[in-house]
Image (tube, rainbow, N blue to C red):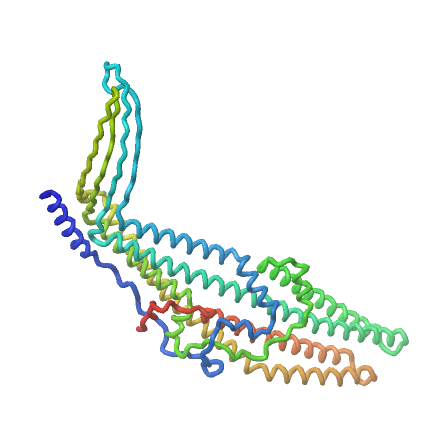
Length: 472
């Protein structure tokens, strides 16, 4: 009983000492976000829900493509595997704080004593327990690191899904824009072919010089080549969508025959009022924060390894010996030893492990700062592109209308014999460039909205118990 009381007292003292964890670096760092946005905000910075953002396109095919791409994406699958791996690592870290319990059993038969012709049967079973006391907080630090890694992996999974959705939508918009450009180039090719035909007839009748007819044929051939090249670009984008989504190409082509209507407006946008609030919407920023927290805990674990380690073990055994028709039972138990391992010399291994952990922590802090700056930059760039597209939209439409009217008038003069082919081709070239520029501008506008959706985190919500990193 005296031994048991002494053991209990020693165990209680060790538990009190276990609260003396070694210090760690700061688990959170100040963000480097600017105090305000320096680009114009769309819709006055209206706050809304990004989760239903894709519904604004009113395009079932786009929604299906995004869902299929997220299922087929290796990046999303990899992120899911990292969650499972991080969850297993957390379970392992938690198990390290608890005692281990093992059972064994054995049965033997043979001579009980050498030279004595007596056969005996011996059986034994037992339970062994072992516990390494987390005296300086190394085990708890490993648990904290594993918990932070898991939270970061879960945010990384959502970030991968948002990235795949944005990439798929951008490719889809590129395809629809390519189709519009193909329609423009085909109209241009038909117009030039008709001009070449009429000019050829005029040349055959002797009213037009052969050189002028040759120029008209060359212009028609150039337009046909441009249209063929544009068709190839559209085919490549179809292949890209098939690769992203994994959908059968015949089914996708069938659904692409439906007319696409460009979204007229994007009323829903979760635009934070200040850049600091962006940190609460970006899963990659959250993941970088958790990386800092995990690296801090790993420094604490490495430092704790340089201090003494205390372990306690115990066992309960039961056995029997049956020989000569008699059976003898034996029961034993023991508590201990209470072992203390004191590091004395390891040629600098533990110190190097701590230095390595500190270096990883400093790297995580630097990466977090870079991630914050990148997040703000992506939003600012998307805002600038949106504002530029908005301001150029009216001028681009005016240019198309003006060049089209000028071309119609020039074409009428040419067919009546009052204008030259050179003048007609110049006007045609200007009209074609304006029409293609307008289509590209429309694509740029939609792509900028998609980029802004991606830059704002795609509707991810920060866990309620996670504070937003403070500003400088």
